Image 1: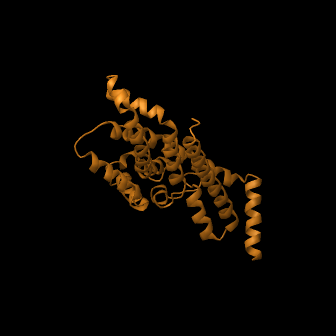
Image 2: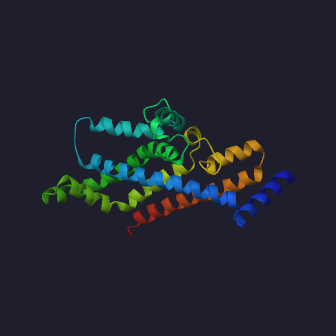
Image 3: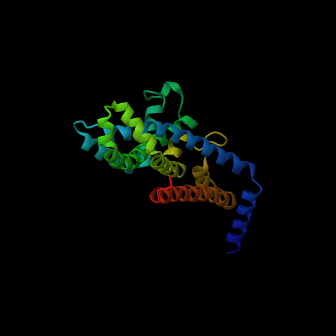
Amino acid sequence: MSDLLNGLSQAFWLVVTLDPDLVEITLRSLRVTLTALLVASLIALPYAALLAVRRFRFRRTTIAVLNALMGLPPVVVGLIVYILLSRSGPFGVFGLLFTPTAMIIAQVIIIVPLIASIAHQSLRELWSDYHDLLISMNTTQSQRIRAILWDGRRALLTASLAGFGRAIGEVGAIMIVGGNIDHVTRVLTTAIALETGKGDFALALALGFVLIAMAIAVNMTIHWLTQTEQEGRW
């Protein structure tokens, strides 16, 4: 028990004093995850709006596949990205393996289906409300997409925050394609795994505190956005 209390006190001290290693790893995690979130949102949100607005053959199948990809194992994604970016892979010439860029690519693949699926559910309901109005105004497909994207921006923000929560806690795919290299690709989750294995529980707990704080902040934000949207204060 004394070892646990000692580790907790040291971890708290590392957080309070802004330990350089802790700050560096946290900032790198945020940089990688926020970049992946931006790229994924630019792909997923317009795609979700297109699925809501446009009717085409195999649309239901496409939506079903998109929902199924939400449960795609991150380790499998990491393996696929590793093969593609390795020296013998088709993109090995770019030398992206074991770099933050490879980690961003893996995170984008993981969270795009999640963001698109959540966004599509919200935009589909919004489109049912706006359908007659936008059709009667003889708008183009791109205008319809832009209209529901703008009016559903709060729900889309919630979808993006859910993607951030998924990405920031990812470890399997990140470990495979990033390699957990100190000062290069080491992020919160991989650093926690490493420090725990080394027995440095103080730093591991401090990193865990930061990760938990981020997860709580994201979930509280999603809860607040959901509540205010239901109360009609947007």
